[in-house]
Every structure is written in structure tokens, then in C-alpha cells.
Amino acid sequence: MKMNGVLVVGSANMDLVVRTIRFPQPGETVFGDKFGMFPGGKGANQAVASAKLGTKTFFVGKMGKDIFRDTLMASMRRDGVDVRHVTFDPRESTGIALITVDKDGQNKIAVVSGSNMQLLPRDIDRAKPLFSRVHVVLLQLEVPVPTVLRAAQLAKCAGALVILNPAPAQELPAELLNLVDILTPNETECGILSNTQVEDVDSATRAANQLLCRGIKHVIVTLGSNGCLLVRKGQARPFPALRVTPLDTTGAGDAFNGALASALASGKCLDDAVVFANSAAGYSVTRMGAQTSMPTRRRLQTFLRTC
Image 1 (cartoon, rainbow, N blue to C red):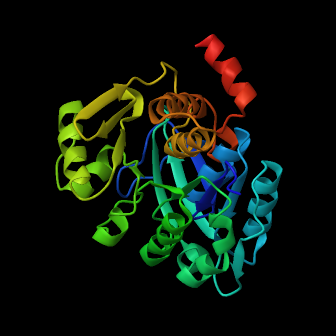
Image 2: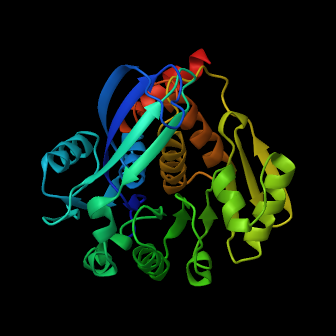
């Protein structure tokens, strides 16, 4: 019997975060005022976002055998993620991300993928029984595309809904796009995938419609402080963002995707799920870090009463 759960296949990183007044120019050194180490990686972030909202969530990924692995695994377990299908590569380091956050909460990120790029289709095949236990399979692009494709294929065979967060953006095979129920690019990713410059709602709508023509059923373009745009055949609906003062935007997109998957797994319709996901993203930017900024359902409800 299918469970109303979420399976996330993707990356796990340790985020090394420095806060500065402003970003340095090329060749320039600036002083930071705070440093922190936070569990991260798009896949792991999205799994934590879903699990903290109360949804049964499984994570399939690959880490190195090092201290970062130990910290990440312990943190994800505490947040309720089932990590029993995580595998390890002793030849690679666990992924890391070097993140600089400025005074406005904006960030610049450099990622060393490490073991994430050793997550292979055969690892997904070993986790095949999980696909029949969930309603939603959530994917990103910080692991090899053939691995993402294999996960989407198994999801479809099991009758699960496929969400693809196409980050970092890259050219994708038609075979994969045809399996995607919901694509969730940001403005930059939407522009790259559609070969269209995305600057506002109108251009985002045009770009999303081009992606619909490539076999995707729904496109949700996340627009940062401008909320997001849900585009499906014959309809484009904007959803405003919460009005908050951002502290750190790292992981906001992951909060959105994890909450979207959680809401859909619980039986919400897509429009209501988008509203819920927007709220979770709004909460996340008011906290530092990625996984540490993901709300529980109770904290999100309290937060929304004060907005």
C-alpha cells in the first residue's frame, strides 16, 4: 500500500558560511563578522524541510567517510529523515559548499561536489522498494543526470509524482523532461532551460510556456521576494511572497521545494501546496543556515500569525 510520504534523491553537503557586510570584488579581501558550519546540500535540505513539516521522508544520497558525513547523518536523523539508504564512498570527500552572505541576506555559493557525483543509477536501483512507498519523488541536479533520470523512471513506474528542482541549471534530455510532473526553476534556471531572458512575470510566463511544450506538466518559477508563478496549460497564476526582513536566503528554494512535496504528499491540491511552500520559504529566510532554517509545522503556524 502506498504511503503518503516523500522520497528525496540528491546531494548532501556541509555548508561553510561567512557573513560579511558586502561581497568582495575580484582580488579583494573583506572581513567577515561571523562564521558557521551548517548541514546543507539541496537534496538533504529538501528532505529535512519535508520531514520537519511532519511528512514521512526518505533520503537517498552518497557521502564520504569523514567527519562531515558523521555530522550530516546525525543532523538529518534528528530532524526525522530516514537515511538508511544513504551509501558511502571512502575514496571521495563528503560534498561541501562555501557560502558568503552579505548584509542584505543575499548569498554567493561555490560547491565541491565530492561524493555526490558518485551517486550512480545502480545506487538508485538498490533503493527501488522505496519508490512504491511514497506519493512524491523530489529530485535536483547536484547529482549526475543519469541518476536523476533513473530515479524519475522508477518513480513513474511506481505511480509517484515527480518534482524536479533544476538546480544548478543545465541542458536536460527530453527523456527526463517528459517524466517531470512539476518543474521548479528560479528565474535564472528558467531562463537557461528555455533560452529566454527572464526579468519579470511576463517573461517568466513566456519561458515557462516554452518548457510546457517540452513535455513538462506544470512549471513553478520561484521569483525570490516577488513570490512565485505557477504556469500550466492555458493558465499562469502569481503567488506573492510573505513580507519579511531576510537574514539569510540560503536554502529558501529548498524550503519551498520540500514544503511543496510535503503538502502534495498530504493530499493538498497544487495551488494550496504552492501557498504552503511560499510560507515555508518566507520563514526560512528569517533564520541562518539551510537545514537549521527549515520550520516545523508548529513553528510555521506561529510565524504566520505574526506576519
